[in-house]
Image 1 (tube, helix red, strand yellow):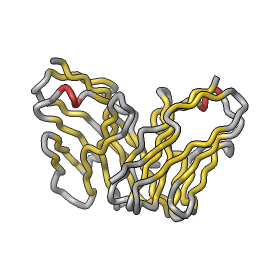
Image 2: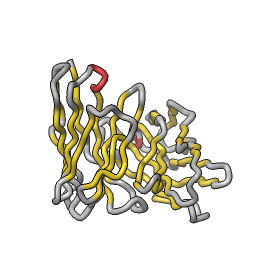
Image 3: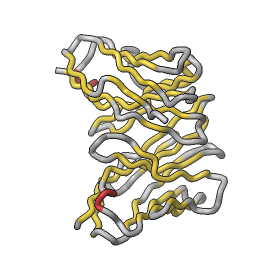
Length: 112
Length: 116
């Protein structure tokens, strides 16, 4: 059974650019969540999608957005990149909140 | 507010010995789940153990067990017979339905070193 797949694994972008990260959940998992991990702030919740609807959003500026497709694959977009957006972005999929979350290997974004 | 606190930024243990990682949490929800995740240098977050808040019995998974004290809002992880492969960052996490949506809240993590 394939796990959660995140692409790309590494990304280097210039300040002011925009970026799109992709997450393919485990087959059958309809909930997809995104997290930002930095040494200073730790793991912070970005948003959660279920059946193409954003159900919850963390405390991030509007430059961070996402969407989910009918096949449950999800993308997150960050516009007007800032140096502080450099982080590991993790995606997790779930069958339901009581079942636990399976994480991908993350996308390491570096903004220069 | 939902918060998870791990008071030990770093821990180290000799191979084959036992180590306990601490975690406390704060929640107003009555129905929730608690997890311990392991993140090795490969970055992949791996589920170690899960505890349902309504169950009094502590969860165990092979060498991993928890001490769940609901009244004290404490959820510690015990690793027995530590192995070199156990070296990683360990995150305590809590999940519940919050404002109609599921959300996973993490602690700051404990870096575990295994000394051979």
